[in-house]
Length: 105
Image 1 (cartoon, rainbow, N blue to C red):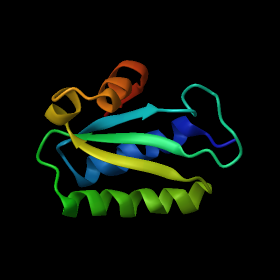
Image 2: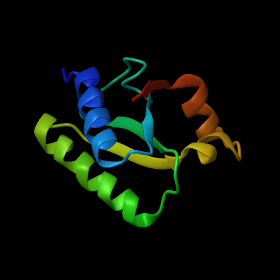
Image 3: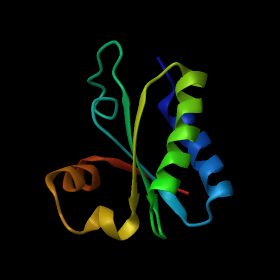
Image 4: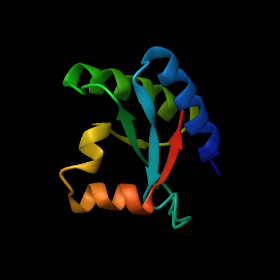
């Protein structure tokens, strides 16, 4: 089984070095609930203090892809600005905030 905490710790360290406004990541979904099947992905929401744009999203996805390869796991990465993960409230955002586990940097 893949060590999720190790992946998240490494990602947090790398992203904080590259992006000073990086705040942390939410883990949610089946891996958090230990309800995984073979091939289950790792659901992560990366949170930034500053603005998020397509250039930043693509850079994060590229970094995450390297972890996909390194750990032989599929990571479903979403990128949000801190204020946008809170408001406007949507079922997805509420599920991430209320049921997810937050790993701050």
